[in-house]
Image 1 (cartoon, helix red, strand yellow):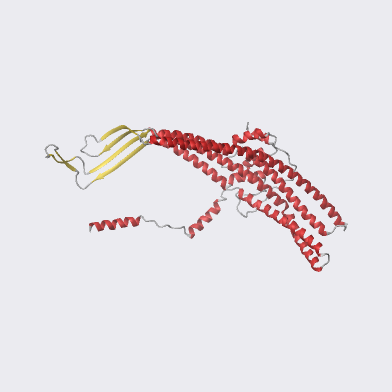
Image 2 (spheres, helix red, strand yellow):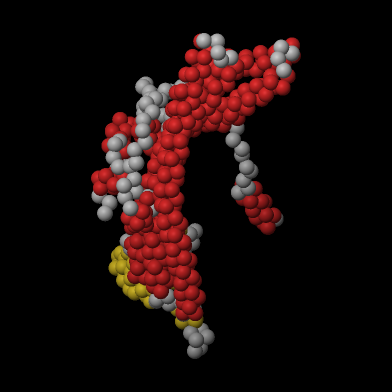
Length: 499
């Protein structure tokens, strides 16, 4: 019967420890969705004026959630470093307890020589005892290992900072690309939509002309083909430009669908701002690229890991000191101090050392090979970014020449229409060509700006000091503008004190 009771109690305990998955309820998911939709744009400065390029960059750095994620990971690394410092401290343990029983603990002794009981049954303990002690323990080996781990955690904080810098450079480049394409959209959207309406009407009129055979069918079909081909190209350009404004809003962390306006700058001449030698640019990139710095920190971590591996093979030395108290009345001394040392050594760790050294050496070789491969890739990227900038400049000049030539042609056709020497069909066709030329003119300019930002990204330099967590949007905008507005690359590097 007693065993059955034990079985019943055991079954109850086991069933009580069984956990059933509980999915989130619809109300919980609904509340979370509502809360998150508010938090994503919480405490942001509202958009009250048209946004400039530099304000768009400032808003991206201050409010972009991907950037906040990198910043949060950096804070996490910093807190892990702060936590690792406590591992250097000895253990100070305070304990107290109570022990009781329903009868006395007693014992007797037996002589090993005669086999007879030598003492009557006696006790040396009360039935209820209260114990307390305060002990300080310090393992010298653990202290050394904790010190190395703390140094490694410090390097991981620096790695997180480099990851943050990489995100900043990438974000600045993405914002510049999206901004200039969105500017093209705002500059041309009204004219583009109006022209597409006219083109659709012209196509329908041409179809009617073809149907009624008012002119040769081949002539009408050829005209329709030209209009439809240009219309298709315009619609593709319109799609790309309209998406750019949505992408820019996402980068600035504006709520999807929120309406905002951009400052539309005048088209100006492209000024060559790259006045620094490729060799110096290579040196700057190799000194400042976050990827190179990250590998260098990983190599430092690996070297410290080698020290930790050797240190873990040494004997451990425990030093302890404590103060104790017991309420047992049979004790001669109820309060006492205790102290001692203990040495322990796992002798089998000696056989682990060769394999550990080989593993660390292999990791060091991998990091070195990765650093050298990345060095070549970065040097190549520097030259590629320069080549892209030069090509973008040439393409912009060509697009500008084409746009101006098309403008003159259109002016001539409009004059011909007024004099009834040119047909309306020819005018519509050239107006479409003019719109395509203007859009490609703007796109070419945005490509130049993007290529210029790509040079900064290839160099890995921070184009401006930022503290997005505390600076306002206006102060960030001013800081960014000072480093970009009207400065050549050499002047910006000089202002950043890059030697």
